Image 1 (tube, rainbow, N blue to C red):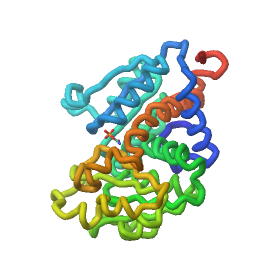
Image 2 (spheres, helix red, strand yellow):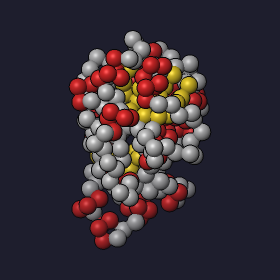
Image 3 (cartoon, rainbow, N blue to C red):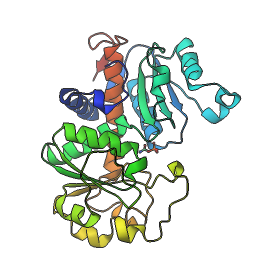
Length: 302
Ligand code: CP
């Protein structure tokens, strides 16, 4: 693949290959023996994605060019394109980009000569989150085909919902959406069910945060948990083996009862752990595809 921008560009084989590589990196150390630079260009806040990329990069032995948009020349009006070209010019071999625009990639594609990995595009795509979510489900069930997965919450403003719904369907899962009035997205062609039906029928209950930063007006949340969220009462009605997921950050007490965040069914912190290995696998994949590294010559395993 040229750049890692969307889950839609991946075949079923591509997805499972990345998941297998990520699993392998959990138990086998990989270290590049070639000096390579990577720039983490985050124009939106991030804790998990950015820092798991940093851990993944350190594990691979990449040299990190850190970037803080609020203390960079972005403040002087520099564009995303000129920022990316600057990092390309000074020797970055790989760019990791998160930006509030849904389509920031169109500004860079074909004009930037180093690989780019999408770490979040507005409300449109979050493909590395999707891959770590798929790994978490795969670890749990050993397969994805035939599983019933519900994505619950602020679907309309969620890039995680988009990436996951399409990838899960591609892998043969039966995907449902569940949302409060106003949080549905008519452009997504998936059936909607109530949270009460979802908890009783689905193998995976994937919760989403209300994306206040993408709303024109702050949503009222005082009765959201009771009406649309995962309460303790609803959790008791879940199938015996069913799991709870959430990309985080979490609004505890809004989309999920705070006591459920670390309950036996929750895989929320497992998802974060998986993020490191999945991002290692994705970076190695694009560096290999571009011929920047080769399996034989440019890294060693122990
Ligand atoms: N899940 C996720 O993207 O979290 P961050 O915004 O903290 O990176």
